[in-house]
Length: 353
Image (cartoon, rainbow, N blue to C red):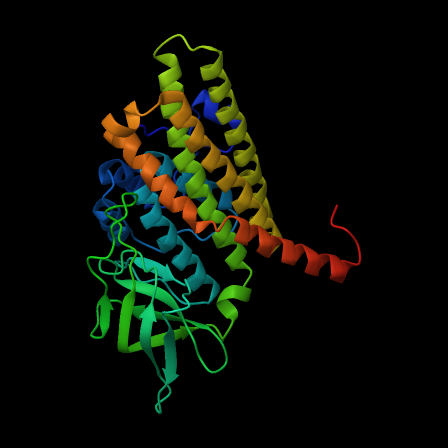
């Protein structure tokens, strides 16, 4: 299991330089948990539950270090990263909302929408709120302690926080048949009269500045998964004298990773400066997703079916990354970016380039 830290700096990556002192007391534990996961989220969940103090929030001055941590964990085990990333995202959202952190908790963020499954929030006479309906794509809902969930209200969608360990919360079972992220089920959850606390006003979740930052942070996990694929490709080339095609595949993968690292490093700086907007986040996610998809393809072309059928770690990583990348919606996300560009150009009265 490769535990080499990932850096967005090519010089640091080649020299094997490690980050400076630990800036979060849970960092060492989550790095160690990533090694133990091997496709099972339990080790990471235990590490998060035992961590003391609020996790680091993005856009607070250390975004690059935070994203490099996510990439490092993902390069080791993508299920570990898929468990860690929403927990850190929830911590950032709660911090932005001015809500204190509770030690011993593990969090998910359930904000996906579906044309067939609806979750509604109703105001109670006493002033509280209650959730009823179904929320799709709720990763690890049966194993987490808490979640941030979007639900419909008469004034638009609103974010709510709740304990997942209360009566009325029923995660679906037996419907997750994916070969990627096989032990990280992401099925629907039924809510039946479940009390919940609002976080921000209606529409706040999507319009807050941190939304774009969180979306770009997911790309750091994709990038880390592609680093793991690249390292396997490099070892394959080192194991025998590579021909010109093998060198070309390795060279293209190197170039793609360098470009993705550069855009992530730049985006981290924008996030800390409060300048990472929706257009920049879409650019980051699209560029990184494209690079990772191509590196997966290059790996298969260069190494053939052998590692995918006989190397447990590599086969799991390739399958996990393929599923994780589907959080990017391909041409639909580019269409959303195109609309943002048109709107921005209309407001500015000029081309962005």
